[in-house]
Length: 498
Ligand SMILES: CC(=O)N[C@H]1[C@@H](OP(=O)(O)OP(=O)(O)OC[C@H]2O[C@@H](n3ccc(=O)[nH]c3=O)[C@H](O)[C@@H]2O)O[C@H](CO)[C@@H](O)[C@@H]1O[C@H](C)C(=O)N[C@@H](C)C(=O)N[C@H](CCC(=O)O)C(=O)O
Ligand SMILES: Nc1ncnc2c1ncn2[C@@H]1O[C@H](COP(=O)(O)OP(=O)(O)OP(=O)(O)O)[C@@H](O)[C@H]1O
Ligand SMILES: N[C@H](CCC[C@H](N)C(=O)O)C(=O)O
Ligand SMILES: [Mg+2]
Image 1 (cartoon, rainbow, N blue to C red):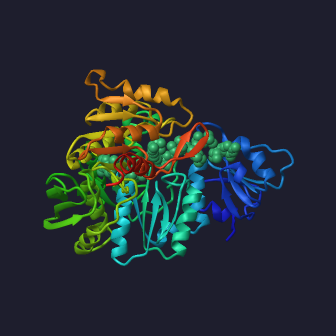
Image 2 (tube, rainbow, N blue to C red):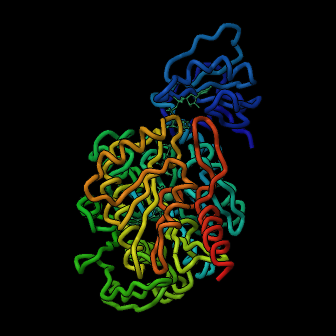
Image 3 (cartoon, rainbow, N blue to C red):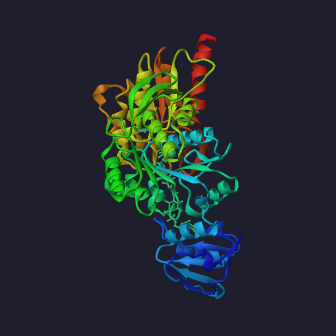
């Protein structure tokens, strides 16, 4: 499976200093993960310059260095250096070459946008399964090949890791792979040299401005997936101005585009939406035909995800009837408006959701309000070392609930109280409808103690996560388990069961 340096660099402008026939056994971008025979890619990062780890990589057995500037190493005359303009781009191209372009072996769907990527990929996977295809999924909750699931570090893996996963999917004879493409991934070229059959856009609202700095830069990162670098069929939600701009660019270029939206300006839009407590019924107008069906997901925002998945299904060539049949029994993605099941709940419904942006929090609250027969209480926090600008906006958004308990969500290297102070700086004290409780378990417990029969509690921000990142530590914490335990502690003990 080894490749020569020349084979690895096929299609790339580069200067090979040394032996172009040197065999490369594997690809590495972290010096401490280098194995003998690897090519080590020296990446100029945001924190450190990977070129400074070249010697460490050689000491661990790397035979080839891919660099942006020559590294003069003492006693390393047997090392081949390959000089390129951009090591990130070179690494992605080399990864595709090394694994013989695995993405060409199946229909790969790339979904981008601020919210709804994970949900949409899950819906697409199910549609493809029901259509009789072998499937794969790559994203925030992890990577799946058929029913085999593994957790992942990133929403979109680094290019060598991505190529390795795609190759495993090819080896497993996958026909359709649905993959989330984050804005970081596009900007850092993790998906460069990957071939997509369909690319889809959900929406763009505030997030990740710590990384992208401006909304326009954030949008342009997402827009890369709809550029000439990624030729594909397009499915674009035209609900916001960013989607309409993408639609304009793609149509001008002559790309095949399916649009989705909440009104008749889109090719796919809802004529009827009936939101239920455990399912939703819609009638969708799909390019002049109407399809009425129910699916077992709740929340208005999921109507948009269902339409995006419908559009992707059509772009993949599936019949609308197959898509409708699949959506009718689609499994809910974990931790997205997931109802907590407990042995006793005192008539209080608890939903765990992954809303971690202002728009998602606003929509998750209004979705739960639509289901609540009483009040709606939200428990949430904001992640540390992530876009601080969204915190006060999320604080303000949370006050749309009857009561908000502000708590901790992966503080990482930051002081949890400082994050909470950022959140509450956006909240109106005078409204008197919020409290601060830094301990997340206690925050959930206090919301449950405060709830009356018929009330709904939304625990937002962590969804499927089963950990809390505090300092450098990963502590075990799962909102779904904690909420079930606290419901039972409150209602099994006080009432002796229900
Ligand atoms: C902002 C971001 O995405 N940063 C990524 C970036 O880090 P960086 O540029 O700071 O790299 P660096 O730490 O300066 O290191 C430079 C180079 O030196 C290497 N190095 C470093 C130290 C060492 O001892 N040896 C060594 O070889 C590094 O491996 C790297 O190749 O390149 C690193 C190596 O590929 C990534 O691990 C890192 O992801 C960080 C950990 C991260 O948290 N990323 C998150 C924000 C992310 O990617 N999220 C998206 C979006 C999620 C969403 O949709 O909401 C995702 O796709 O997961
Ligand atoms: N279409 C949508 N519009 C607005 N909010 C949405 C939409 N779909 C989901 N959400 C909200 O966003 C949360 C995250 O959804 P999902 O995991 O599908 O998004 P994502 O784009 O994959 O997020 P991430 O950037 O973390 O990967 C949900 O729990 C819900 O609160
Ligand atoms: N993919 C998102 C996940 C955020 C989840 C939230 N629990 C947090 O830790 O901020 C991010 O990296 O910004
Ligand atoms: Mg996701």
